[in-house]
Length: 79
Image (cartoon, rainbow, N blue to C red; front, side, top):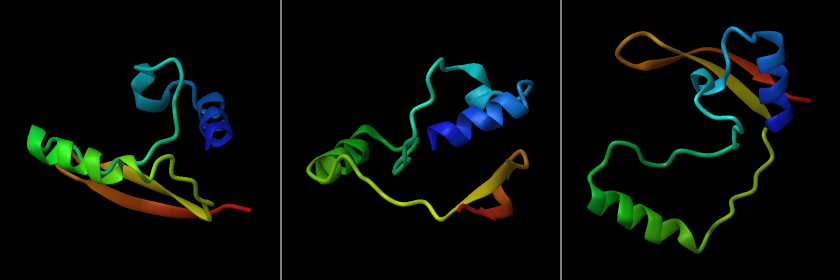
């Protein structure tokens, strides 16, 4: 995932990952966002013993934000 992200950033430098906010982009899985602290703490406690997660990625999706929500525009199989 790191190499894919770097290749995308090299190809389209005008659109850096996360708007260029981070010098090093770490592959990750978002499991909760914008929840209250109690929910986030519960999710963290539930997942702590299962980390790190490893997986084989067979495809990636191109997601586009339309102003109110994310929509999948395309899917690409990985070799």
